[in-house]
Structures are given as C-alpha cells and as structure tokens.
Amino acid sequence: VQLQASGGGLVQPGGSLRLSCAASGSSTSINVMGWYRQAPGKQRELVASINRDASRNYADSVKGRFTISRDNAKNTVFLQMTSLKPEDTAVYYCNAQKLVFGVRVDYWGKGTQVTVSS
Image (cartoon, rainbow, N blue to C red; front, side, top):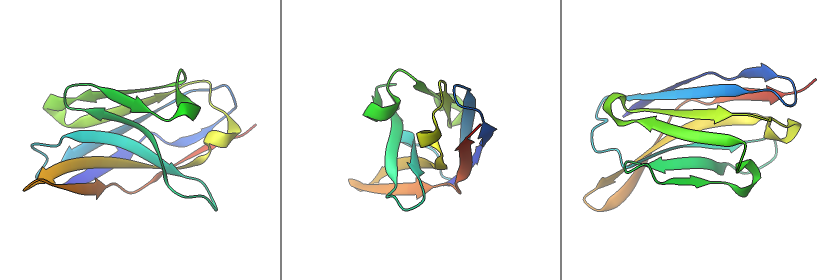
C-alpha cells in the first residue's frame, strides 16, 4: 500500500487547512485510515482515525476543530482542520491499517508539514 498525502502548508492561527491522502497498490481491505502528527521533540501522536464503517476517533486536543472523512471507493481520507492553533504545528502523517492473517499491519505516507504561525 502506498499513501500519498497533500494539503499541508503555512496558515495563520484561526485558519483552516484540508489534508488529503490517497491509498494505492494493495489498498483493498484497508480497515482504518487516519492521521498522526509529530512535532519537534515530541512523539508521534494520533490526530484522528476513521474505520471503514465511518466510526471516528479524535485526539482530545482536536475535537470540535478537526473533521476526518473517508471515500472508501477511492481509498482516500481527508482531514479538515479549522480554528488552527500554533500547537497544531507538526508534520502530519497519513496512516492506513490492514489485518493480515489477523495481525495489524500499518502503512505510512511521507509526512506533510503543517505550520500555524502569524
């Protein structure tokens, strides 16, 4: 599975950005797609994830500001980010999960930088 992310950039506090990530290759039977982020000097953390049945999970820090959605037909996941804060600055990584013989396998895209600054 290959993941291609796009949509990062520089935005002012309070602004919005939309990230997209398209899966290709052996992208059938992807169960979960989501976004993680890693700020300088910090561990990578889950931002949001969405299952094939559209159930969603959000980090507390982004609830009410970020919305994750998914197009199963196109194996694409989106992250709409609003009311951005400087602490949202990080490299954002697209993630996809499959179960292979009952074992979770993670796939990662190259990160896309999101910078929130005035």
